[in-house]
Amino acid sequence: MTTVSIVIPVFNAEKYIAECVDSALNQSFKDIEIIAINDGSSDRSLEILKQYTDKIKIISKENGGTASALNAGIKIMTGDWFKWLSADDVLYPNAIDELISESNKVENNEKCIFYSNYDIINSHGKIIKHFIEPNYNNLTSFELNVILLDHFIGNATTSLIPKLAIDHFGKFDEQIGFAEDYDLWLRYCLLYNCRLHLVPKILAKYRVHETQLSKEKILTAFENKEKIKKLVLSKMDQSKREKYEIALKQFRKNEELSIKSRHMVRDLILRFLPKAASKKIIKKYLDFKKD
Image (cartoon, rainbow, N blue to C red; front, side, top):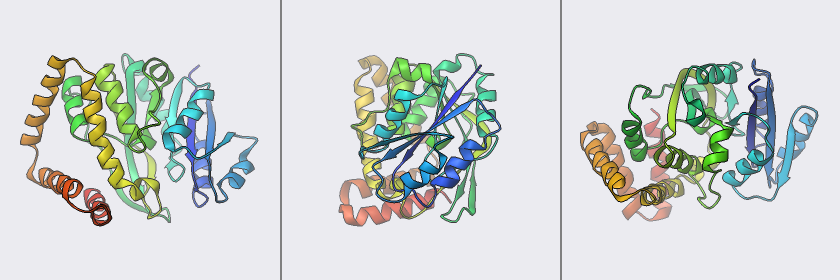
């Protein structure tokens, strides 16, 4: 029997955590456990979580960041699959069913990271946009990895990862700070021949709001992504690394002008603008990218 562990890292999420937990509890797929990691919250998050004591597992720890919270959940999970769910996001009732159903159709699914399309919602839960991911399922692993080197693919809150992969290839890197999902994706795919696989259905609501951690720290995340790329590539043998670097240059050369322009603006911001100014502009860039 297949089981899924939903791990929810929680840091000062009192406005949204109840809706998040309820969405996990209301899954049509019933063989799940829910683990909420209170990562040093100073608001009412823990108080709200305790209302679910008879239905979920709760761990409280000092604040250590998202990767630390996820790893704490992974350490005690008992499921065959690891499901990341951010505390301000929401799963549709059929999310786990659809992810597991798709995984059963895929050969070597123990080396796959599954992810899906999603709705973008605002702080009030109103749907702003249906986000439909490009479908790369028919590409070769090399072609897909080149795109992944260029930019992050998927949304971590929609992801489903086999526990066997985590056992064999490692947990989240707690030293990264931000973009720990991108680090895991790259390590698994480039170093251990895992593969990303899209489930082409809208299965979650991803919330965008002014206080969310990912948006407040977006500049750091962009900087970390460049460091992550260099670090992962440095762990490959020279011939394989050079093959990827050449393919990445060619991919970027062939990108559509609008995409290339956005990347150019991003790179100029990161390299030359003062951090105080670039943070505001990066936020605008992020909003523009989701239009």
